Length: 99
Image (cartoon, rainbow, N blue to C red; front, top):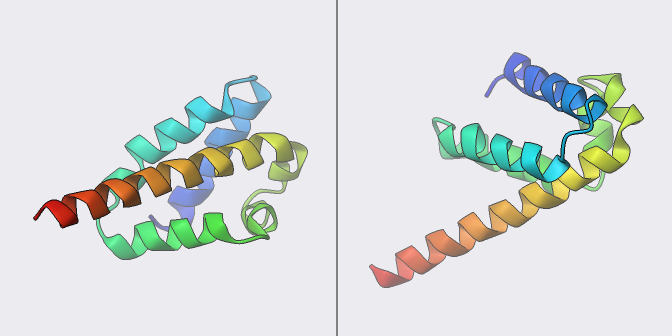
């Protein structure tokens, strides 16, 4: 996922926040439609690392300052994505243990 694609996704999330959409729904859709369809593991890992950073909001606000108008929404998106990442990691570990 390149810079322009990430910026476009953040802009979509800003619109969702403006329209009162659920942060959980937005996060789940992003995870299912975008994160799980990344072409290589390094892109997935880079997004995971961004989400795990304490300054996550400041990082994505560099792509769009409007993020700062919806900190609760973006923190909820982050929290949900971290849950989904952990679930995916756990499932991958369980599958590897079964092999």
